[in-house]
Image (cartoon, rainbow, N blue to C red; front, side, top):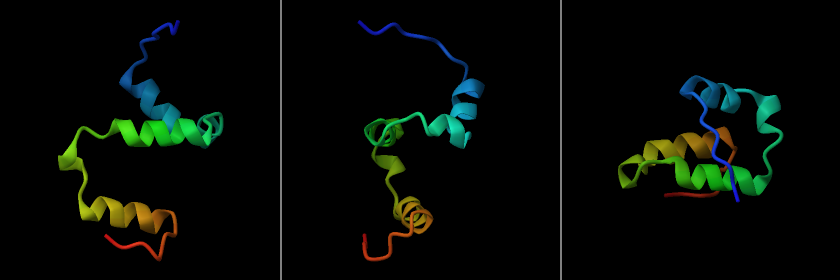
Length: 63
């Protein structure tokens, strides 16, 4: 059984802005966070994906 821990927005954001903190997450953890954190279809816009692709050096994928 998972125990829920309440954290503040500030603590949550500090965790994700800290590379050392992020290094404790597995690739599967990161995919889970990425795939569930957006609110809905209004978040999925071409400029967002263009920025992500640029940040990660994805050059051969087009929307």
